[in-house]
Image 1 (tube, rainbow, N blue to C red):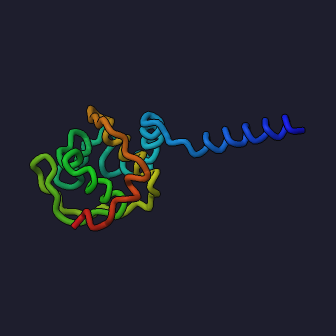
Image 2 (cartoon, helix red, strand yellow):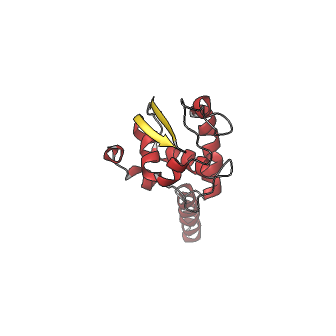
Length: 137
C-alpha cells in the first residue's frame, strides 16, 4: 500500500508540475500564430506589413522594437493617438482585444520573431501582467 501511495504522489506531482511549467519560446510563438490569425491579421495583414498610413507595420517596425513595453500595453489596453513607425505617422485606434496575459505574451512572441523580426528574449505572462496602463501616457 505504501508503495502504491508513493507512486501515486510521484505521478501526481509530475503531472501538476508539467501542467504549470512555463512554455518554451517556440511553444509560445506557435500559440501566438493562431492568436495573430484570429485577432491581428485583419489590420496588420498576414505578412505583418500593415497598411501604409492606416495600420502600422509589425514587420521590421522600429516602434515595436524600441517600445516593447508600450507595444505590449497597446495590445493589453488598446492604443489611441499618434505614433510614428518607420518615419510614418499613424493616428488611429486599436481597441483592446480582450486577450489574457498568456495570449498577449504568445502573440507578442510571434510578432517579435516573424517576417525577419528577431527578438532574443521571451515575453512572459508575468511580464505582461506587470505592465501598467500608465506606460501608454
